[in-house]
Image (cartoon, rainbow, N blue to C red; front, top):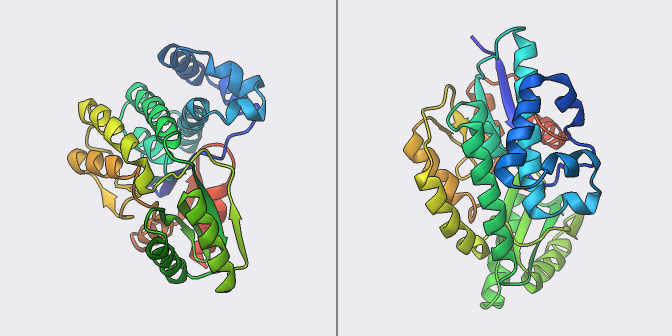
Length: 297
């Protein structure tokens, strides 16, 4: 029985030169990268291997790049675990964008279809970001319940603005999302309530908030038209943190993900309760490994 749990990062983990080492290690990975160039209609490999940080920050590049790096890393790591054949995961999960990588690893979604959906997701999110000036902010050292109270209070005070919890990353680390004014006011209130830090993030818009509704509608159509299969292992999804193996429910949760918060703390706690012991992070960076360590305390 497989003992490893595979987790996949989201947007923000990218770096210049990403994927080049994976490309050079495996014929299968080289084929995946070349296929990605064809599907996307531009040479994402050139940008990943030699582009600047600014080049990689373009949403249309960032999301496919992180996805491509993650599934390629999984291809190599999972085969190393069992020499000739890819190891079947015990469980899989991804943070935001990483959920698409997790679904590919669990064989619920083909690599090609996954990449096409990620590209459409990036395009739809970028368009939604351009409608209303919006942002996100990380709140550190304040209980989730207190951050939720602040968001509710600010939304009541500023009925024309939006601010909601977006990422429950670990105990004492939560990201809020919404219109620029509401997020700024919420940050000040969080600091007044004792938050160690409340800092605006350099992102393109208010991901995982109601402001992503236009993107959700656009992506929903693409997801509904895409074939999803029963995964080979439970995939713990962002919207509720629970395991899922039903293709219909997976689609529904994936669509809801764009406007709902990422419940990463809940995902990891549920995985641990279900027997997870060894977490393997596949993708650029090790942000998730750090969060998992905090959640396990």
